[in-house]
Length: 78
Image (cartoon, rainbow, N blue to C red; front, side, top):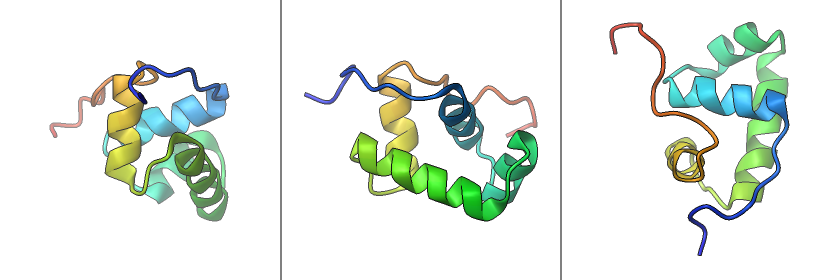
């Protein structure tokens, strides 16, 4: 069962996942974390593989289920 299975992620990975959950695009995540877009894509791909997620939406859903991030926390009127 995947639900709340233990998954160690770094603070940076958690921050990237939270921005993703907030609906941010790769370039926005990169800007917010001070990374290049390529670095963000690489980090997310590695994290998705560890989570068993095939897409961004699967990764966000899994992260929310596991309590790693909160559902959309931004207040950008979304």
